[in-house]
Length: 95
Image (cartoon, rainbow, N blue to C red; front, top):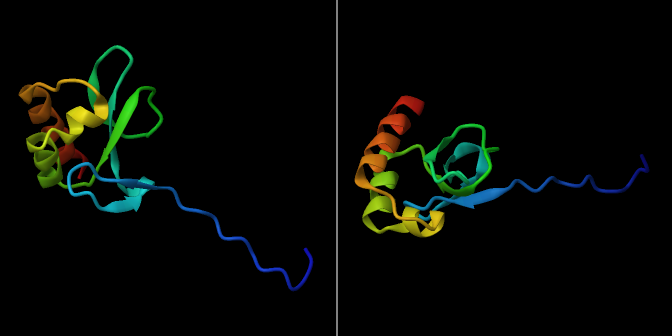
């Protein structure tokens, strides 16, 4: 390594929470995914295939995203209320 050259800093990927709109590092958010089969679930690994949206570890953000239809818009599908209830229960278990 040559001396006098500054070290490159790695860019940390950021995503925006669909509930509160705040930007966070990708690793601290929870990904909600619509799979190619049409199932909507939490993606704990962040690697499932499908259309994704990100949420804070806060149930209030999920409720806000449901109220304003941001989650439906981001996932490009209509989401029934029972799915929101299931996601909120999973979110509470995850935290």
